[in-house]
Length: 66
Image (cartoon, rainbow, N blue to C red; front, side, top):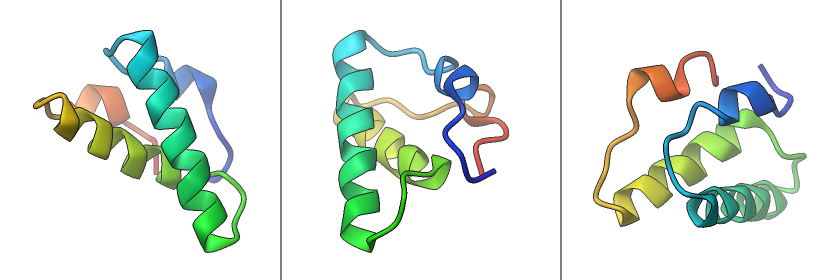
């Protein structure tokens, strides 16, 4: 899956501010690569944000992302 899937992103169980951070971080990761935003960027950003929150992503939150 290459395109952004809002339904899959909605599976995250974090507050709105964290979701904003994930979206921005994912966009920056894609820009650094010179690539369009993809779910793999969002996954990397989500992992980083969850680490900041001292939490782990669950398999159900990221099922089918990449």
